[in-house]
Length: 271
Image (cartoon, rainbow, N blue to C red; front, side):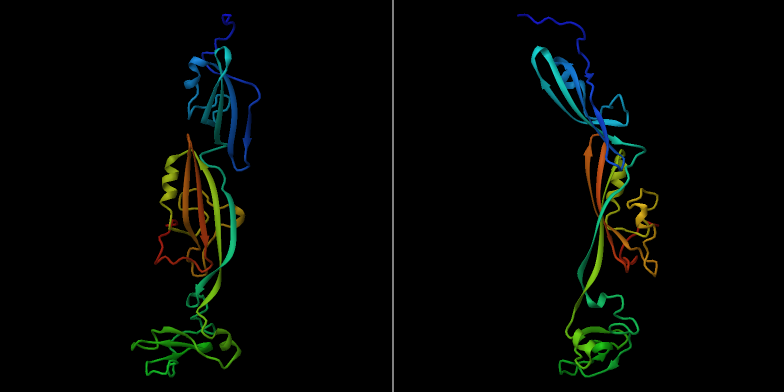
């Protein structure tokens, strides 16, 4: 029996009723729409990057074409976009843990009244029984100077056993330091933003945004991330990205150090 065609020839895709637009709460919009189209035009009727006509904020990410009887094809198209502007809001998760660090990196190690106290130290016999120069700090700490002076000490270890504190520190070389990290996700419509974010890896921040760039942390976490000596406390540890047509997903990790990341070692994004 021959096919009899009437009505719309479907040479261009016809949007079907029932589509919905989802907002994830951070400004990311997604939509799945269905179209009917003549099978001869269906393969190229909708392409990646095409604008969703009912809502120009959305652009096509991927397309599926299903061919059925009577020469009619069904097109399923996935769209994504941003609610307003070029960026979504940062979607953040975080953790606070303990990491093992050398005890000499403790912020109170060389402080007066702290763990070992400041130089110069008192001359003392070497704990290994040799004639090597040795100097005693607080709490049983012993330093060698390699022939230089007690003002430029080299930490040898804790060897005191007379007081309760000395016994607790005996031969101790490490301590547990609290560390925090933030993992974030942002979406942007501009590829230049992806390139800029990649360039921030290994750099520090003293505010929740690099200079002249997008906020990477929400406002409720605060805006000032500086130690007491104004050293930046945030480090951009990693950046990953994915391409969704005309939309880019950026995933990143920020590390927080309460003592800060010294400017002598790390470049800063806040110039």
